[in-house]
Image 1 (cartoon, helix red, strand yellow):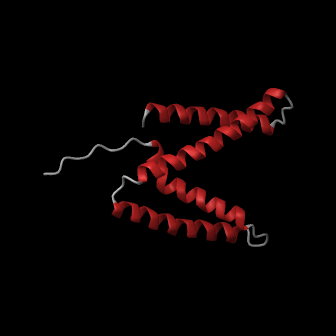
Image 2: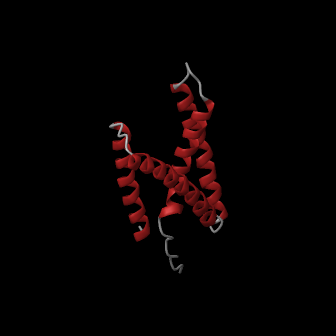
Image 3: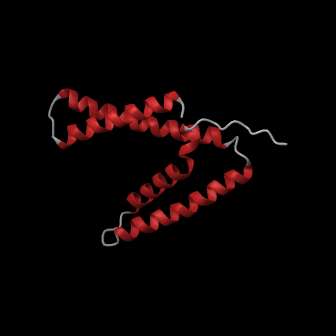
Amino acid sequence: MRKLSIVYLIIFTISTSLTLFLVYKDVNHPFATAMVIGYAIFLIASLLYFILAILWKAKSLPRQELQSRAGLFILYFIVFFGLSFLLNFNEPNLYRSISIAIGMSLGLYFFDLALLPKKPEESKP
């Protein structure tokens, strides 16, 4: 992994832990409110970065690999959507089911494009 990716993951882990602690303990302090708002902004910025990084690197992928990834993304989207919908069958919430399915599918098949460095081209004989 790149050093920047490691730093990002450390910051994400620390800020998530701190935010969970602040929310769980119901800390009522101006710093706590600012921390939770900052964390929400951090998550939105991370989401935008991941989407843009995935799109940027996906355009340089070979067409066959891109089609394979897209096919698996759609397959897993359907599986995760179905499971989420079935688990909440009594109280169906399509927005929640779709967002869970998209997030898990994107994370599963395109996460390596956003954070992992590009593999060096192997010399072909």
